[in-house]
Length: 145
Image 1 (cartoon, rainbow, N blue to C red):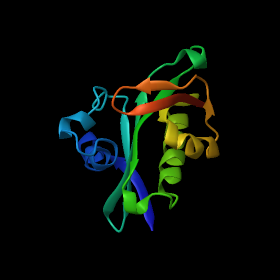
Image 2: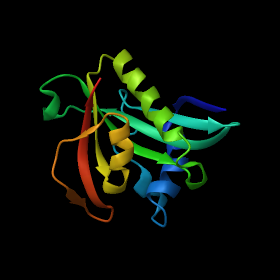
Image 3: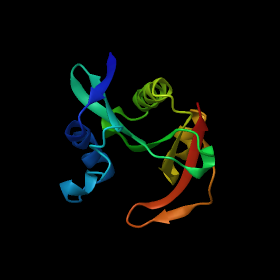
């Protein structure tokens, strides 16, 4: 059974690095905002083995017109566990916490290959495709909560 719980930024790096920064130096998986007071990290665990992570950063976006919004970053599920519903559980759990923190929306810069996943959870594309150096094509996506 999958359990979702709050983890440290260091714990998030254990999944973030091999999934999102494979072959790159370990430090590239760290975000400047990782240890901000308002940032939180979730881990997905299967029999106490961490298999997924997501980071949520309080970060306003003009799309939400001054309402409290949070940025989803570092969404990662280990390869053997992808397409099993773990990512969905992480995002839905993060959304509940954002609502508890009085947030009105979540946004992210989604990799093109992840757009379908986020669409299935109610996120909408709100930008043209753009290129993130090294990581390829992305879209900004948002969801009101």
